[in-house]
Length: 149
Image (cartoon, rainbow, N blue to C red; front, side, top):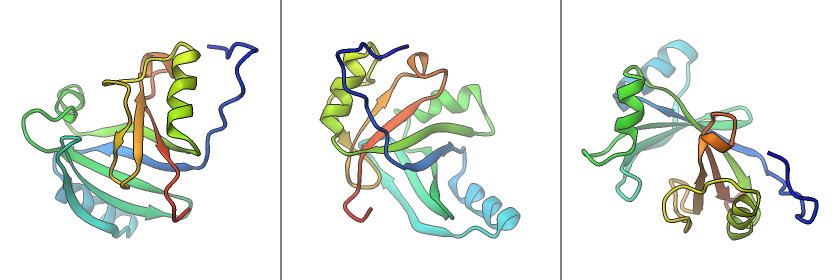
């Protein structure tokens, strides 16, 4: 997919995190600790609006977002049905302006999932997801750059 010449380039900010779906959040935390010596930087918490339970692990230049389904309506159930042991779910990039990013994705012909309206993500800032069919098979999350960055 090539951006039309009339559109300004959309510059992605830093890679914020890689989302990893897991059937058991506590077991995933224990595994990352046992294998890599990793520790949770943000204790597990529920994010009901997204249908997930989340924990973050800091790495040298980014984070891992461990996500497990929260309730029967969680979108993670579908992923885990195809990948029962879990796995990489998405990559997340920061953008300066989430509305401009959403509009640029649409103008470039990409599908913004859900209603298309940004919602608040696990970092407390607006996010959108771009359909993997438009991004080489990778679910891409775009998030407004958090103030602390």
